[in-house]
Image (cartoon, rainbow, N blue to C red; front, side):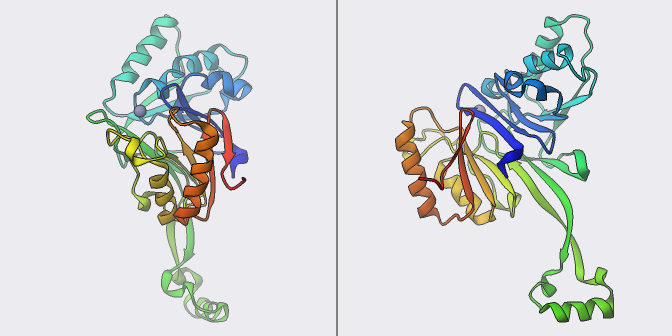
Length: 283
Ligand SMILES: [Zn+2]
């Protein structure tokens, strides 16, 4: 699962997540172009969750590296961002001001909750509302792909009976379309609704706090809340991110492992801490 992703997460400093097979970057904190290196030309879509500096300040550097680096400098790319955030206007002005008269092959696309953008392979990027720091809008994103499955009323029948019905009524009568969640990212957020990410292959979720008593404002999730979202949604792989730097890491890892055991979540679970994906199932 994690062989197709890389990322960086340090709350207040820099956050970004690169999903290679989707050609999608979520958030663009400082260091993004440096970390991508020769892959800087690979992303097609950069989806911004909200306008805080640790999520957007890598954007001018990314634009510059793509425009003036050695590679596909004219390859188009799209920045998707919450409609109405001021940060994007500022960053666009920065890019224009740094490189006067230079054209960038960027499509700037404001999006609102429920808005959808096509990705590669017939997949779709969909924005959803999250609770972060009102009144500035903040979004999470999920990537869905269309799939077919047996209708629920046939799902538990013996195979022989399904084959019989398929011969009698045609296979199409037994099947239904659904949207499978390949990937989802909460951005900075309070816990998201599990229904948004049901059955997701990979969920990246805010886990700023190890303990709800450390939280003064309701703008970030706890690790236990993120685990509960993943358990309820039956997510396959959960990546906890944005863990506050107030916590000493060796102690934090012990506490996270205890929380996983207590949560009943049975999928894979990692902590993204700086650029490391720490497997929390491994003691
Ligand atoms: Zn934030």
